[in-house]
Each structure stands twice: as structure tokens, then as C-alpha cells.
Image 1 (cartoon, rainbow, N blue to C red):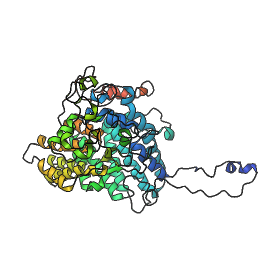
Image 2: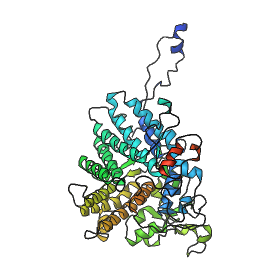
Image 3: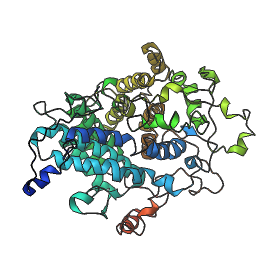
Image 4: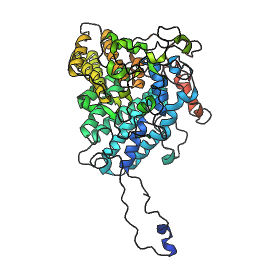
Length: 511
């Protein structure tokens, strides 16, 4: 897989000393005057999952410090830093995703969309950039609520340096439109990014997979609107399903990496857990008791693939998570007082070149099952979609070095059957419990948090740690960066419209 775009410049011809040739003489022939869009697409993809200059910065803070701990998939006794465990605020931690994404991934994607729009032959690069922008903006609005969207990243293009904060409803409707249009515009007759698609680090130029991914993201966002605007949600869910969603684990949307060294060409979650920050190897963060106990109760075959004690013991019955809200003092009162005796992400989970998974086929089937139960899909069996999701979700960890067999996955599905005779609420609970396990096992904790806020499942017992800022309730959003105060005059408008800039304020879709 080629990770570099080779730029060949024609050699300069005869150079003279005439002043009229001054501009040409002073152009460096070894430096391109324009970066190819293929290269910009590759860079934007890496910045989507990583951070400029530090591949793990925004993932560390938003995905692990807050989302993973709030969702009780992970926990840390370092409660003054891993604040999602106890629902407290630290400005740079809460702001990291915002402050990293806008000047990097968003700015680059907006610039790429502008450039690629100029050439009809680059419609595939344009469409991919539009889809990637939606993915990043969906994370931003799901983390903070109302955020800059329509004017975001246009400082260089339009001199907009204080963009408006847009209403989340308007953001969602435009994201759905973008996914619909971008997926439909992909064309086999236009050029692929790089040499046959090698500048595309997700699907390597497979346009059918891009189409299905766009439709599946459409399904995810439409289901998120289920309580806020059910009629619009129903319309977009039906459209996504009719256009064609993911068909197997081969369609899973994941960023692929080949560089096993430092730099942005590394899985950002892996960088944080392993050789970069070592938060797993240095006992900074472990699996939470809620997550490990749930997997053990369900005889989940993923457990020995994703979890290990510090001595690399992966025996399922020996795995134990840290109770959420446990600090260093409380640890001493537990039956096991050494952090080495608690489970953490297994080493195969954080190899630098494992794919970083953002959207799974299993999720597509679980959302399909819910859509069928709500009457939003014209046909299909919810039980069948649920079973396919269980098998696919169990085997998804194999992309990260897991060893779950087809037989083990089938046995798991049979042992945790769909409640066909249950109420809609019982079915949604079963669906969301599976989705919680899928996203936790592939380290997509931000998405697990969004799913939990929409449905309330799985049922989590909040932590009421002294000094917490939510009155002992799980946060509904992160707070805006302190750097925006006094700089962007539109921030006050957003707070007035949405509600106080606090952890407990609910955003538009969170009813």
C-alpha cells in the first residue's frame, strides 16, 4: 500500500539573467506549487482519527479520558485526570476534540472540498471528502451540541474567523443531505485517489463500499434523531436502507495504517494505549467492572481477545474490571489492591498498524433490527438482523488481532437470543446492549456514549463521587473550549439557545 503521492516536476529549462525572468528563476523546482488533491485526501483521513503533531491527542482525551470512563467501559483510579470516571471538568481535556479538529481535519477537508469541486474528474475525491467531513462533524456536534458547521474551516477561503454556532437540528439535516448526495455522486468513470485508490486509506478505491458506508452513516444519524424528530428520522432511515447499507465485516469503515513507527500514520487509540503514551501498559486505565462483568455473564468470546491482566493472562474467568469511581484510596479496600491484577486492553488491541474502526457492519444490522421493530423498514426480520450483528460483532475483533471463531460467535448468539416476544423497549434494550459491547470492544467509546444518551441502554449506575459537577448523573455533553470565550462572539448565542455550557445540558436529539 503506497502511502506517499509522488510528485514529478518538469525540470526547468534554460535560465537567463534577464529581469523579466526573475519570478521563474526564483521558483524552487523541487517544491510543488500546488499539493495534489490525492495527497490532501490522505492527510485528511489521517487527521480524522489523529491529531496534528500527536496522533493520539484528541482520542486520548475525548475517547478515553471522558467517553470510555463515563460509559463504564473503562475506568481509572487517577480520577484527577481521567475525569470521565467521576464527572469533573478540566478545560484542556474537555476542549481537546474541538480544538484539534477545527484547525486540522475540518480545515483540511473544507479546503479539499473547495479544490476538488473545480474538476469534475475528481468527483470521487470530492465525495469522499464530503463523507469524511460529515463523520468528523457528527462527532463534534454529538460531543458538544451546537457547534460551528456551515462556516467552519472557511477562514482562509472566506475570511470567516468567528464562525456561527449552528443549531444541531440544522447540522443533522445537512449532514444527511451530504451523505445522500456524496454517496450518489461516486463514479466509476472518474479517477480514483492515488494510483488505483492507494491514497484512500479506508476502502482503497472500492466505491461500492464507500456508497454502503455513506448509507450506513445515514442510518446511524437518522436513528439518532428518533426522539427529536421521528417523522424525519423515519424518512431518512427508510432511504438509507433502500439505498443499501453494509453487507459484511468487509464493509466496516476503518482507517488503515502501515507505519509501525511514530507519527500520524499510526492508530491513535493504539498510540495512546501502547508505545506512545502507554496508558494501558503503565496502569493509567483499565477495563471497567461494568464492561468486564457483562461480558463474563454473557460468555462473550471476545473477552480473551480484548482483555488481559498485566502478566498477559487472558483466561476469561480471571479477568476483572475496576469499579467505576474507584480512586487510589478506595482501591486499597478492594479484594485486589494492585492495578496489575485488573484487566486492561490486550496487547494485540494496540498494535500501531491495526485498523481504527469507526463504523461496523454489526452496527448496521443492529440499527436495521431496531428500524424493523419501529416499522421504519419495509421488510426484513429483526431477529435475523440481530443474530447477524452478534456474529459479526464477535468476529470484528479479529481485525485487531482477536481469535474469535465462527463457531464461538454462533454459540454466543445462541446463548444470548433476541427477545422476539418481548416489548419494543425490551428489544431496544437487547439491541443497544449488543451495540455497547461492539463499540466498547473496538474502542469506539464516543459512539457508545451517543447510543446510550439516545436510548438509555444499557442501564448504568452513575458514580456520585465527591465534588462531581453533575449531581451524580452521567454527563450529556462536554463543555465548550474556554479559548472560545471572548474570542467568538457567537458562542453566547449558542449557549442562550441550547442551554448552559455544562455537562448536564441536553442537546437537540437527546430527549
